[in-house]
Image (cartoon, rainbow, N blue to C red; front, side, top):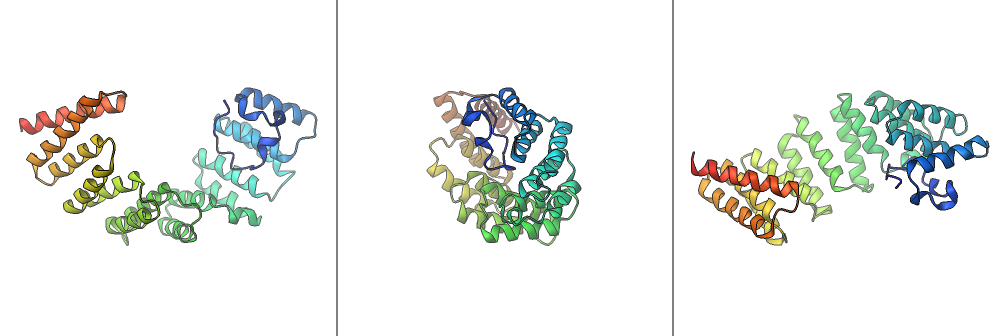
Amino acid sequence: MLRRIGIACALTLWTLVAAGHVAAHDDAVTLHAIDGRLAGHDAPASALLLRAEIERAERRWADAGADLDRAARLVPNSAALARCRAALAQDMGRAQAVLRALDACTDPALAADPRVPWMRAAALRCTGHEDEAAAVMDSALARGQDATAEHWLARARVAEARPAEGTRGAIAILEAGLTRWPGAWNVSSRLVDLDAAAGRWDAALARLDGAIAAAPRPERLLAQRGDVLARAGRPWEARESWTAALAGLEARGAPDAASRGLETRLRSSLTAATNP
């Protein structure tokens, strides 16, 4: 099946290939259909952008770049083209090229795209401009531009790298993120880690206890609670949490590798706690 390759560079491309049946074809068939249209010289630039995106997903970067150059002769100032160029540069680890692609485009549609600030911020971070990256992210979050839980986590990582913010700043950012995404456990889990790193054991445990009470399968949370208690110098309570987590896993069975790995880790932690 055609992979979800982030066809951010052409929002209307699905109608351009194989009479609307693109989603049912694999990449090779899709590319063949595009090639046929391009050979007939009747394909719009968006077909080139779609082919470039598929080539980018397959890490055929030179081919993708060639198609983008060809599209640029048709739509030189297109927001879609700029996004595709920036995405290709990002995949290739060329942060400066990401910024150049975005800065060169004056199409208002680019500035309105909620994905663009996060591409820019990532590139700024790669070039060592943490303060500028933070400002770009803050602006995007303030505008509410489709910010996901992952975006709040990304902003918190920037805070951790900035002396002006540090761990406390990252905690404040993630707490704000939780008001927007109250059920985002990835945000809550990171908050637990940051609270523990700052020695805020009670805050970390309170977050975990709230999540455990609402979780249908709390074994991983119980394991994390045990880890926090061990770090806080409360070994007996840690053993209780690890034991409860292990009992839950054993009762349910370990259906996947991650669960089996957690079970092994819990046994090791309990053994180590029994024989210090």
